[in-house]
Structures are given as C-alpha cells and as structure tokens.
Amino acid sequence: MRKIAVLLSGGVDSLVTARLLKDQGHTIFGIHFFTGYEPQLGIESREAAADTASRLRDQLDIPIVIFDARKAFQTLVIDYFVRTYQEGHTPNPCMVCNPLIKFNVCLSLAAKQGATHLATGHYARVTKDSNGTFHLLRGNDHKKDQSYFLARLNQQILSKAVFPLGGFTKAETIGLSRKLGLTPVIPKESQDICFINGCTYGEFLEQQPGFDSQEGLVEDIGGNIIGEHQGLHHYTIGQRRGINIPASDPYYVIRIDADQNRLVVGFKQDVFSDISHVEDIQWIHAPPPQAIRVMTRIRYRHKAAPSQLTPLDEHTAHVRFETPQAAITPGQAAVFYDGNEVLGGGWIRM
Image (tube, rainbow, N blue to C red; front, side):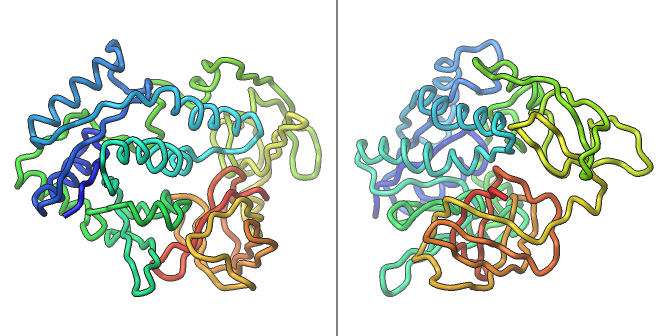
C-alpha cells in the first residue's frame, strides 16, 4: 500500500476520492489549500480553511494539512490571468493551476510529508504499460471528462498522480457519497473560474493592481470603423453579446488587437477557421516526428475534431481541421487526442 496525499476542496469528488483510497488500505492524508479567493465572504481565508478542514476531518477521520497557497496562486495563476487579458488573449487558468499549483507546489508539499503519490478528484485515468510509460486517458464519463485540463502533465508527474474517479460517472460518485454518508462542506462546486465570485470577469480584472484598459475603436473585417468598445477585456473570440452595434445580422468578435486597442467584428460565418498555430506544447510522450492525424479540442466544452497536426519543432505545430471550427481563441489550450488518450497540449497563438 502507498502513502497518498489527497487534495481536498470540500466538494463531493474529493471526499469520495479520499474515502475510496482509504477503504483500499492506503495510508491517506489530506491537503486543503486556500488561495485567498474563496467565496466565503466576510471570513478570513485561514479561518475558513480551518473550518473546512475540521469538517472534512470529522467525516474522513484522516489527518489534514492546511496549506496557505495565496502567494503562489497570486503569482502563478492570477498574474497570468491578468497578463493574458492585457495581451488581448483569453486565459485558461485551470490549465495553469493543475501543473503549477496542484501537481507542482502541492505535490512538493505532499512529498515533504512523506507521500509517494498525489490524488485528486479529476475525472481522468492514468495507466502504465509494460515499458513503464504512463498514459493519460479520458474519464469514462465523457460528459464530465477532465483530461483536457491535465494535458500539460509530464511523465514524472503522471507517475505520481492518482485519479480514482476516472472509472466513475458523476452520477455514480454522487450516489456513492450518499451511500457512504459523505456530505460536501462547500456550498456548491464551481462551474466556472473558481476565483471569481460575485462579479463579472471585467469587474474582477478592473480590481487588480496595475490592470490597464481603455476604450477603443471597433472595426469590421474590411477595416471600416463602425463603433467603440468599452475595453478589450470585456470580449473574447466568438462573443456576440455586448458588442451593441446595429447591423443586418448580429456581429461576433473575430479578432482582438491589443497593440492597436481595436476590436474586429464580423458575422457568424467569419467566426469559423480551419487553421490554428499552437505553441509551447507539452507532449506526454515524445513529440511526433512528422505530421499526424489527431483529434483536437480547442476548449473544454469543445467536441474534439479531426485534424492534421504538423510539427514545426518539438514544441510548436500547425493544426489544420478537416472542417472549420468556431472561435479558435488565442490564449486557450489546444489538446490533442488519439482516441481516448491525451497526447499533449499547448497554447493557441493564431
């Protein structure tokens, strides 16, 4: 049996994860980290974390380490989030948090506490072949599958990662929690960005020190000036709402030009493209030596689409889709699949 640290948020997924591993006979302890952006308004983060940890400890009967991750989270996630918007791109903070906070900072903490592995409640699977190579696979529940968010993990991390819920559906996890008498200790699991509570993305960004945004011009794809925008951080590629410029058909955001502080809009057909340039690709195995056919997801809720991936070097590639895809968005992650297996993922920079 192994000594496994379990990241415990207080939600049903992490609770069931810990209980399953404990019942399997592993030596278990929890890590409950707080970021300073928890939704418990009016309560100091450390006090809220201590209360959550106590309630988790009562249910699971395991030791729980409380970790103050505020500094690391601010530097690695929040600053990245703000910087990416200022560059005119749309960030994907979960793609940064998983490899840098959960499977780096927290994994290091777990190792110092004597753990050999780190478990989370992600719906994904890890397998090991006869050559000792680790493979990241989609979770069995394809509606809940979270392998997309883990695509930038490497072999070393995957060798220490444990995902007990990969073989479960979300409904099965909820049913199991009730059978085991486990009760979530957070009000509701986040369905969006976890650190934004009670405000819009734009309002959150405007509250951040040093964030600078100005009104600017809106132009159509022909270069004609047709209106003004209220700050580029209010927009993302493919967005329709909030443009507020009358036309025969609704306008959609086609491009965000941060250098010129201009918003480029077009009609629905202009949102589609069949080409993407992807940089800083983290491959789970060796990078492909030549062009290969893959299934590519360009955001979490996107259905993976057939495409041709042509490597330009070890960490850069062109991707051409067999059929045009809507809203290929700079700043988002492109994740490549071979069937149910994740090959790797990088940042869209088209």
